[in-house]
Length: 80
Figure (cartoon, rainbow, N blue to C red):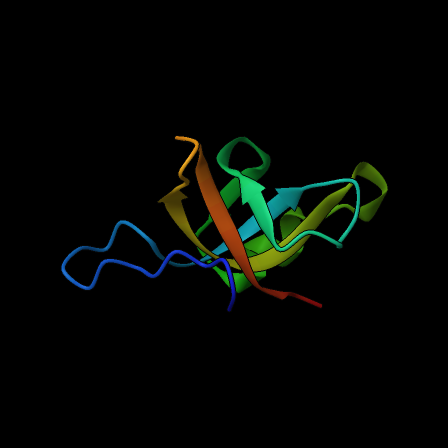
């Protein structure tokens, strides 16, 4: 994926995780850490979703530190 910071193979800092993402919509491919609530499982992400409140279930990769010094999560897939 273009723009994706690859995970460090020696640590588990940036890993594949389930999350609930607070965003206006599903157009973005990366999110600030403050908009991502990491959860324990796919079922927890689906249960925590509320599209009316702009909270969407997703599988994300992160956190990664951007060149601007912000922590980001990258979208792997939206969950249905």
